[in-house]
Image (cartoon, rainbow, N blue to C red):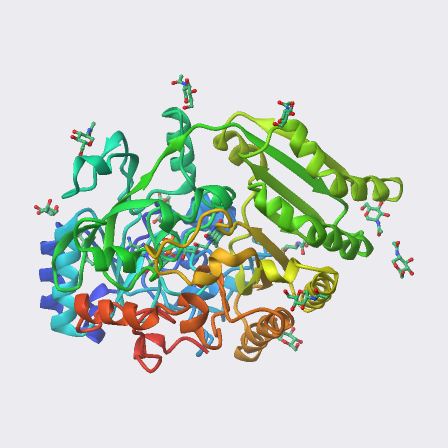
Length: 562
Ligand SMILES: Cc1cc2nc3c(=O)[nH]c(=O)nc-3n(C[C@H](O)[C@H](O)[C@H](O)COP(=O)(O)OP(=O)(O)OC[C@H]3O[C@@H](n4cnc5c(N)ncnc54)[C@H](O)[C@@H]3O)c2cc1C
Ligand SMILES: *[C@@H]1O[C@H](CO)[C@@H](O)[C@H](O)[C@H]1NC(C)=O
Ligand SMILES: *[C@@H]1O[C@H](CO)[C@@H](O)[C@H](O)[C@H]1NC(C)=O
Ligand SMILES: *[C@@H]1O[C@H](CO)[C@@H](O)[C@H](O)[C@H]1NC(C)=O
Ligand SMILES: *[C@@H]1O[C@H](CO)[C@@H](O)[C@H](O)[C@H]1NC(C)=O
Ligand SMILES: *[C@@H]1O[C@H](CO)[C@@H](O)[C@H](O)[C@H]1NC(C)=O
Ligand SMILES: *[C@@H]1O[C@H](CO)[C@@H](O)[C@H](O)[C@H]1NC(C)=O
Ligand SMILES: *[C@@H]1O[C@H](CO)[C@@H](O)[C@H](O)[C@H]1NC(C)=O
Ligand SMILES: *[C@@H]1O[C@H](CO)[C@@H](O)[C@H](O)[C@H]1NC(C)=O
Ligand SMILES: *[C@@H]1O[C@H](CO)[C@@H](O)[C@H](O)[C@H]1NC(C)=O
Ligand SMILES: *[C@@H]1O[C@H](CO)[C@@H](O)[C@H](O)[C@H]1NC(C)=O
Ligand SMILES: *[C@@H]1O[C@H](CO)[C@@H](O)[C@H](O)[C@H]1NC(C)=O
């Protein structure tokens, strides 16, 4: 991480929130690992109301790394979706242009680097007592807490103005136990398990799994955390159709709850908490220090790939038609993957190569029909020896370093049932696509072959759905409030075409920030039970995040939301 030197006395900031003594005491109780939260682009700005100083070398590093998630994940002051380091309500920010990082104008005077929503202080968390100290501090001083891990969140649940953050990024341990028994369970519960610190990212997990000749489920990006918000919110990946969601596979959590207890939660102890952590969402029930997840044997996979030129927009409707026509069968055959307006990647562990070629024939025939007029057409099926090989070759990740908004819908199997329902679905997809400012992504990552056994708290709608369709919008840099409002309304309206033909259900980690009826959308029938568990472990609401279980929209910590 860049060592950005504070310019303003940090005591000025401290005084605004609490007394200096409190902060000094906190710093000693966490071994001196309390730091000032500084916006990433601070070294580029001459004028500032925030800590730090200009530094051309550091500014260059910031520009070079601004759209690289592996750089950003190491910086406390960075947020992948940049509006969450800004105070959107007051248009206060410290941003350069993600669409053109070499453009110097955003940081030129009279523009000012402002603290925005970047937490004032953070603790570089290394153990349970760090977290316990933070809970005690927050209870005593009223300073709001946030938990930040990788900074990937789409809904700003990892930042808040004037807050103290618990940064779990440096909890990066990884170990494999082929005979893992959850603590307190009978030996008969033995399973192969990978235990990972809360800050562990997908790249590390995939490399570790390869090295140990096993498969561990991850999502489709290099630096999303495998043991933080991704996991507690559901956690989908390309193999979820057959392996399940992250929450289906987790065997144990180690967590510090807001009452100060350091607990182990699994199917044999603290079972209510275990259920809540399996889908209730991050930043709500405590701070997870590590989790253990089921390891599967290494497996070879069949991959099918199809793409045409992005500018060949006339071909998209026919493409969606072919996908809609065949998706029910592909879901039954174990396929997962990712679909864009001009590209699809499918992968399954259940078929062999000839079965894959046969079942993908309609898609490949469509590609063949486009080929004479589109030099960008590509299609093939290939076997890869492992999930790691698939991840390295086919996973490209999503853009970061810009303001991003999304709104999403689960698309149930019923929408694929017959000609009429499929035509309605394709119409809605085309309408949505026409109204997005960035793109429409379809995640073929629902646990179609993994039934709901009541052990998780995600919405039941995951189990009956084939796709999660995500309308995506993006805008750049510091923006007037009216433009921000337009971005959120625009994406929400785009998703309305899909809302009109689907039940009230969406993936909480990839959802509309202003999701109507969010309790039902994210948790189905589970919300009342989740709320009870929240009150049991966090009676003072020390943890609170946007649209999280038990949140109060009027809390000052949400003052930067528009
Ligand atoms: C580029 C990109 C690609 C993505 N790809 C996928 C994908 O393939 N599959 C998928 O399911 N999702 C994906 N997501 C969404 C992802 O699940 C969410 O962004 C998720 O919130 C990330 O969690 P995190 O811990 O990495 O990040 P953060 O933003 O740091 O944290 C997210 C939330 O979890 C809480 N949290 C984090 N760590 C802890 C902890 N240790 N204890 C308690 N609470 C914690 C935070 O308080 C916050 O509320 C993607 C997002 C992006 C931006
Ligand atoms: C956690 O770290 C602090 C500071 O480095 C140390 O004093 C403390 O003993 C550690 N606590 C545990 C439980 O390891
Ligand atoms: C906390 O203490 C350490 C070590 O004494 C020091 O380097 C650091 O600057 C202090 N943090 C703050 C916010 O003052
Ligand atoms: C600028 O940043 C570089 C790299 O972090 C550091 O080595 C250097 O000392 C800084 N310069 C000043 C004047 O602070
Ligand atoms: C990016 O900004 C630089 C500096 O202002 C400018 O010269 C360049 O043309 C811009 N590039 C694009 C693609 O707009
Ligand atoms: C694996 O877990 C088992 C059961 O809890 C335990 O007895 C064993 O020591 C662990 N092995 C390693 C290498 O940690
Ligand atoms: C790796 O795992 C696979 C599947 O379980 C097994 O067939 C193979 O023998 C293992 N390879 C090594 C080198 O252990
Ligand atoms: C798409 O772009 C390519 C190359 O940029 C060009 O050759 C082709 O004509 C374009 N196709 C359409 C349909 O615009
Ligand atoms: C796209 O379709 C429209 C209407 O069918 C047609 O007029 C146009 O020529 C097509 N464009 C291309 C590049 O094929
Ligand atoms: C795939 O499986 C089918 C049915 O089980 C079998 O007939 C076929 O020979 C297999 N193909 C390959 C390449 O193994
Ligand atoms: C088509 O499927 C939809 C959704 O499952 C259903 O409501 C409708 O009755 C079906 N129509 C026909 C003609 O089967
Ligand atoms: C804000 O929106 C207005 C109206 O659409 C547009 O003209 C302007 O360029 C936008 N400003 C920014 C900074 O995006």
